[in-house]
Amino acid sequence: MSTLGSLGLKQALEYLRKINEIRFGSPPKPIHELSILGRFNAWQFFQQSLLFGELTKTPGLKKRPSFHLIPLKFGLVVVSFFGILFLLVSRRKVLIYTIDRVSSSEGKHDFRMDGIYAHLKRNRIPYVELVHTSPAGWFRNLLKRRRPAIFLQAFDAARILSALATKPNETLATQDFEGPPKERAFALVRYFFERARIAEFRVRCLRRILRASGVRVLLTIDDTRHYNELLIACRLEKIPSIAFQHGHFTKYHVGWLKKWETAFERVVPDQFVVWSSYWKEELGKLGSYFPSDRIKVGGKPYGDTSQHSQAKKDPSFLTVLIPYEKEADKEALAQFVLSCQALENVQIVFKIRPDMSRELQLKEYGLENNSRLIAGSNLTVLPHPDLVVGTYSTFLYEMVERAIPVAILKTEQDFGEGLLRNGLAELLELEGISRDRLEALAYTPEDVLRARKNRLVGAEPLDFSNTLKGILDPLLGEEGQLAAAINRPAREVIP
Image (cartoon, rainbow, N blue to C red; front, side, top):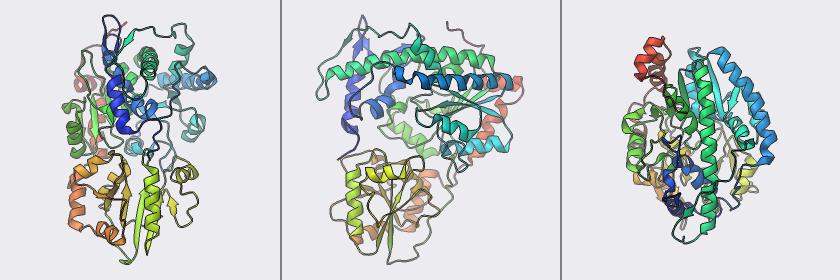
């Protein structure tokens, strides 16, 4: 059984499609035509949050901003005030937007942006960070980074406390839903109406800050949930925005996909740097709203795609690795672990996420009392896997990059269908697990593994540092070079 909450992913995706057709206003128009500043499509902002937040968790939507978070917001405002002052006084040209994680080996930033931080450090390019955080751990992470920061949520505080934060009073209409109640759908729409108004307020604040700063380029993780207001502000202030891929893409990554036509502009970065041609093609197959000419194949900013699987040292012994996956069918995977441990000379390794509690991850899988399980987060000290088994995660693609055999455990989910559809992994049935089957997967021929790797990353993986250098060098030069590189008119005026 899935642990997603009130709806499984398949059901939630269909329910989201129905929500997107709710009509509002007079005359009625589809909710997906909700806009901000009278120019930009805003409903796209909320697709990923709806699918992986509100629709796949236990019902209990907060219908208005949480006033019990006001003390937290006050702290973010104070810290951000000094971060903004630092940005304005220092005149730094590079602004980084990132998620509030300190998962790198140095404990200073999100490891998925390793290549960006390494390039800036190596070339002595100073920067300031704008961070999307969460109530848990924001101050601890600030102390770990030991750098000034501006928090995106700081701009919400004034908006929430203002008299403008009134309940939207739009007329909503739709046909009756099958399954979850229509009332919940309407509550979701009204909540995100309010989020759209907050988004507009964020844009106005960010524009003023950027206009007074020395920022010449935005480097951002492709966080389609939260970076939209910043992209709009940069666009209106003629500041180039460069986004970088941080994970895999599937039909459930609705924040990246085009699900409707709109009369308003879609919010996209000036360039979107993806890891390889495989991912540019995958976005095309899935139907992304990112224009093809803005998607640049540039290499991966983290990890080492040159690594290769080591030869098996003990043919009589099998090591099977299972990664923690947040949205996995954890009961099925726990049953797989027990089935494997019942076989002779089969060792199970559980790869935990370094940014989450080890105990919580094991407990979610029901493996906290499994004494035969080897668990850890560092692949360099864990036993080398002969086979990796999971259901969908980016980690599985990383194992393909290392030419390690990957299998998708068959469950009710189809989240990992891209790996199967593109021949990067094989399907593994839970029923009838045997050592012969595991051995057949573990002994996938070397030429097959290399072909999978080349399909994913290319025969000669691109050097990400060279890609970033080619992007930044013309943008961080003299003002004349900058204008030529951007080739844009003067700043646009939107009241």
